[in-house]
Amino acid sequence: MPIMRHIAHPGIPDSTRIFYVPTSARTLQGSLSTGQTLLCAVTELVEAQGAKSGAFTLNGGAFDSFSYVMPALSKTPEHAVYFSDTFFVEGQVRLETAAVTYGVKEGRPWLHSHAVWIEPDGRRHCGHLLPDQIMVAAPISVRGIVLDAAAFTVCPDAETHFSLFMPLADGAYVPHSKTSTTEPQTAYALRLAPNIDFCTALEDFCRAHEIENATIFGGVGSTVGAVFQDGSTVEPFSTELLIRSGRVVSGPQGHRLAELDVVMVDYKGGISEGRLARGVNPILVTAELVICPN
Image 1 (cartoon, rainbow, N blue to C red):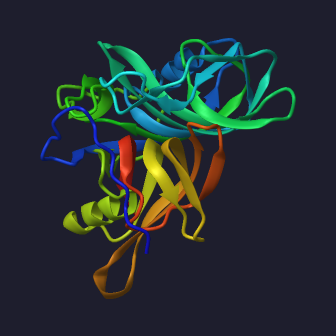
Image 2: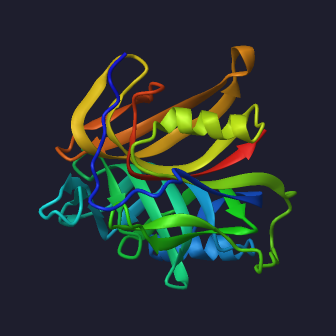
Image 3: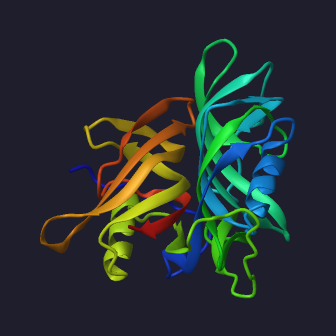
């Protein structure tokens, strides 16, 4: 078994490594309207559900005025890793899939999204979308969960020196769904901190909360390189990833097993995908997701 890597961030780690808020949640399925920015289109859909936070998967459709960033090495000691300069793509970009965390930044809607797409020249790429700058050019399907009593909220993080989505309780918020017909279900909004293994953190969380089987919604984050279940590895240590499909299932003798199928891009531009191996994939900066017990 490979030794799990470690990333040294410039700040002081919080003793809490799994931040979470229990909440009720409702499933959401719909389509993003064209002619708006990604941020505005997602906001329109979420607000129609009487919610202000959630986690989603996007599939199909297209973007225009497309811009994104990639993981990069940091040029200063203020951060352990950073973002690249902005890349712009001319022409329409076809979306393959994306994971989205939607919430609040400085009192206004915001989202964090990593995606895989096909550029006009046929190149397949992966990266971090700039949601207030790209336009929805063809309808995009949305599937996910909206939260009733929790909100992902951008907060300063003393360990990484980034401002990151954190799950915060939002008990004062009373849902007033306009269109939802789904019954509320129990859910947990999570943020995972650096240097804990992605899979075992989710397994430990589910065990502690007596969750035998669960579905993962959203899933935007980063790992220190990667080791996949088939033995393949990603050596460049700075990555950004999205969960394409995720769940936690009950295993033998009461164990929980996290099955995380991901796509990632590293700071050298390499795209990798597969199921993460257990015990050897530490979080680089953050991971955001919602766990719903089945």
